[in-house]
Image (tube, rainbow, N blue to C red; front, side):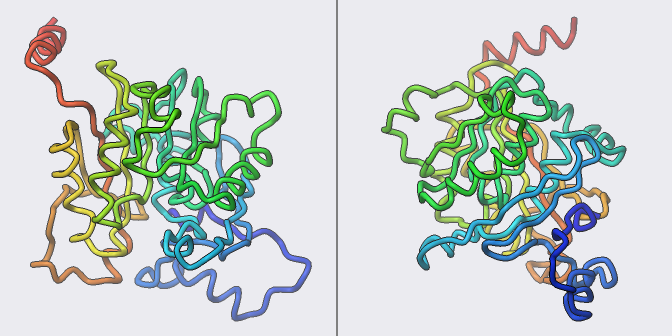
Length: 303
């Protein structure tokens, strides 16, 4: 279960019975699964079998507008991405069978919405997993970016820190120096829990297209939870196609590792809230291929 990979640091104060019970609800009663972890300004520990315990600070956003981004929590989508790209557990290795390899070794990685995963966790794990370089981006609010930098410094040894860059980026705002100099510069793009704002779908897809390399095997990896409702995130994949991407694979996985096919709508739009919180959609996107590229790829596959 994804929740079992997250722990709170030991406190000098003795936790109350209520605190212990509350933090264990998702393990005792599966219909109360915790899909978000921590509190603003607090710390959580991600227990990685491959890289040990990673202690991550959660941002305490300034102002109501920044709080509405919900970057002050670590979400299960971010935990799942860390497991996928880290490949540090037997369960994590099993996940690779459906979506192909999620290895980042030697790749140029861009994380869009690094605080949407709560902490920059996915980008940090990508560095540890051997990425050539990783750029962690989020909304250009200084307290958000400073929090990601703090987590980078805490969890990466000095020799690895130069591989990690923290950069402000507003989705769809593509006229700044960063957008020009790094255009088509990333072979892997990660987006964890970035789909809950349907009004941002077009801007998010435009950023993906702007930064995704033209290399044939360049991928966008998307993982998102259904906690805000399936109807809010489902349209993103149609928008992505309109903006020049295509869906290579897409499926659903719950917090215990059970998988099923993707559906835009379940139970006649009457999906149980407690049940849908357990599930995430996982998608692998790539650039739409031209006819020549498609014929070349088919020829290679046929030998």
